[in-house]
Amino acid sequence: MKRTYSSLLQSSKRSKSSTELDTVITAKVDNSVLRSDTYIALTHLIDQSKAAFITHRIPPLYFKHQLYNLVSSRTNVDRDIQKLFELNTIRLFHSDLGDIIMFTDDYRLLIEAQFEQLSLSTFELKQVTKKFLSELLPNCFRLSIDRDLLDEKYDLKKSDIQLLIQLGVLLVRDIDHFWFSVPNIAKFISVVKRGRRMLLHTLRMRKYREIPLNELKERDMKKQCLFGFDYHLNDLIGSNLATIIDTPTGSVVKFDADKS
Image 1 (cartoon, one colour):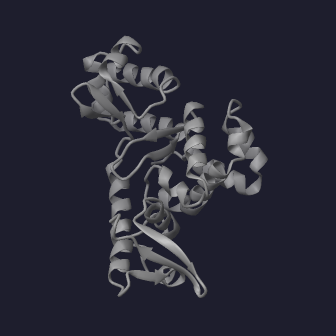
Image 2 (image 1 turned 45 degrees about the vertical axis):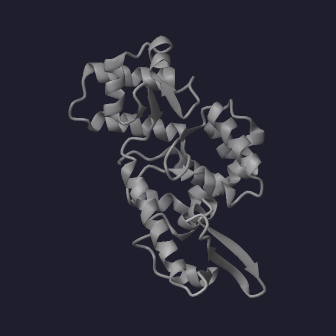
């Protein structure tokens, strides 16, 4: 994608001045959330992986469970992420791998780019896309939505819903319910699954299904872990597929057979 994602720009600004970033994002975001361990951990994830997302032309997406490995309190993570969601700073999306986080500004850029790339873009699709961005997104903070609410509150009829499915922002959950979705998310999911498989395979091949963290880092996994080692390790640990154990000789990553 030719457009530059705002969260990646914001991340580079934070390395220069966190105060500048707090001013850039939005005036209505509570400063206490921006100073929270959760938000600092999220910007840390961005710093680690931003180059990979740009290189592979994949929207910058993160899992909420990755933050569980970086912040001591899961309760605080859930609270802070929900607050950022309700402030429309981020969007949350359901996936079989875990809840996905995307900055709202990035999501808007992606939808606009997706609309421009669709060969069947029509006036109707343009109007529906505009309504989705200007009316629905700023006022709906949930992972899914039902047909009645789309119709009664946002005046989106059956044909409009089909256009939003075509755009990739709605995904059928059942006959009358829809997940909010990220256009072309399949490539992202594929990369995450590949990274998980590689790390889990490495752990399973060990006699005690564990490996020193430093030794694991030194392995050449660039082709399988496209978003960077730390991104994929945080995914593995945060989703409880493995654990990190501190020992006198250093940290050890251990396969969690009960969760895998």
